[in-house]
Image 1: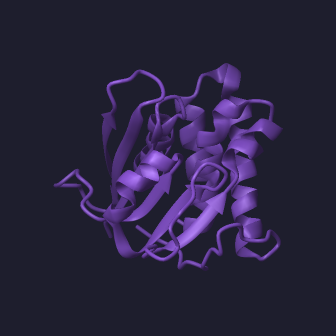
Image 2: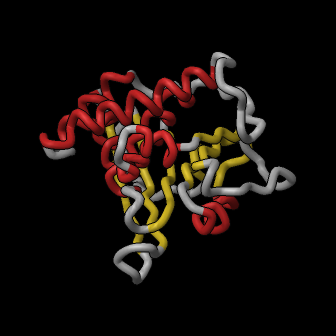
Length: 197
């Protein structure tokens, strides 16, 4: 089963690290296959940034995302640029305090998370990307939490490993609470079926 995922935001939000964690979780921890391509704007920080992931249980022969099964957006510009590339009925995950969506044109199951605020509660706004990974894991049902945790432990420096694992747990817990109705949906989210490889 091939799953196409696009993560987009602006430089400095950790889009590439989030994509790396997802890819490693699927390929190295879970034992599947993954490819990642990336795109940057001309600015080092603050410009457009996106990563395309293809996750599969078979070798990936074409590494580019056509219509994404899942679109994760961390900025308004990313939503404006990539919303039209989401497969009809796909999953749209947004940083709901930074992104306003057009509900009339949304062709997706929409989930919102205040990832920046949740990261700030941990004392470091910079881990909003890993909060988003945790939320993605919970609402998508793709892979096991241990797959993501193993990938995080592999790719982040040891001195910030615990912080990143706590950020993942915070995003995951928020996503689980949302699915269980313990958190009020901020974007009129629609329950989504779990994805699988």
